[in-house]
Amino acid sequence: MKIQHFLSIVFMLSFNFSFSQDNKTLSKTINDLFPHIALVEIKSDSTKKHFIDYLNFLKKVERLKKLKGAIEFGFNGSEVDNSNLYTIVTGMEASFGGYPLEIEAKTNIQTQITNGAFDENLSSLDISMDYHPFNNLTHETYVFVMRTKNKFLGIDQRYEIGGGYIFNFYSGNRENGVSNSLVKQGKDLIDKLYAYHETYSTETNGVKLKDEIKSKLADHLTKNNNDIKRTNFDAIFNAKEEQQKSIIKRYSKHRVALLLGFNYEIEKTQDSLTLFNKELDTTFNKTFEATNLFRFVIAPKYNLQGERFKWTNTIFFKIGLLNLVDDLVIPDDTITNQLVTDKRTDYWMDLRTSFEFKISNYLAFVSTLNYVFDNAPKRIYFNGVNGIPTIAEAENSFTGINFKLKYQF
Image (cartoon, rainbow, N blue to C red; front, side):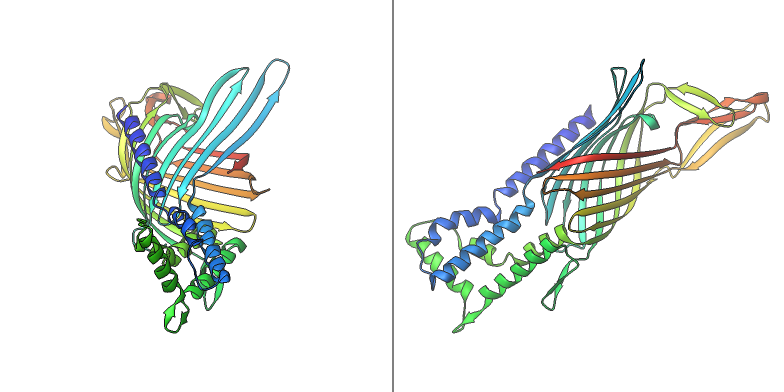
């Protein structure tokens, strides 16, 4: 229960923090200024209109950080005279922010219905927060909490909490007046951003247009006793760097990354875990105590996107930190009076790949592949033929393939 309470607290803190940040966004400052712009003389009507277009453009880029969500659904069924089997796959995800802070929550559930009886085979709940600490896209920190269930691997409940560092390479950039390696929407946004920035940095008689606009707005607000500060104007005209990074992060065609981190993991297996010895075609059922351990995590990532598709790939390697070797030992009194051992490097490999094809602005087709390999699954010795100790172990690999429709908003 302590872990569940902790997850709830972290989620609420993240949720509250995200929306407290939203209250201070550039969009709010712009909305506060709009009523006053109409009352201020700015060179000419065309200049005023251009300035209003610029503010609306900044709001459009800020909307990249708005709360976004998606719902996924997949279904498979078979039926004969005396029985039926249906599998339902559902998922939801939501994200808020972008650069420098992003908060994301995902949940997925796979339920099997056999002759009307429901059985949850797979489920996951993942909440994470990412932050770029050094005013660039290369360096990124993250923290997360996750709860999973995998009946095929005998996992009844697993809770993970952790954090670490991500080194990124985003392909998008703008050099020599040309935007490169961005999808079309990203190119259009970043080119407009540079065009607006150049306009308001242009000097006439030694005065930049942005300084003239700031001065006239400030005088008007002072006369009307309005509390909008000059620093708010600076945020408008100095938004280029952050806006550019938001666009590159969202619309780069390629992203290559390396994650390094640490996880604390608590796992409870099913009440009666089935163990296998494939050589003797024998199975056993055994109850195991819950385990908790620390793991070092390394994960290379690669994302590719085009105008209508997105392909994401991550391979997690989770290595026992304080228990690099999982050593199963029993005394062998019946044969040699020596210890019988089974030593294995304690690591997980978790491959996650997803391909998404955009059918419309709101609807997409998604296919996912998840492959898990556990090099040191739960296992026991039993007396085999002629009293020779023989090992039985839980399933050590899992492959899941899903095809779903995704509605995003």
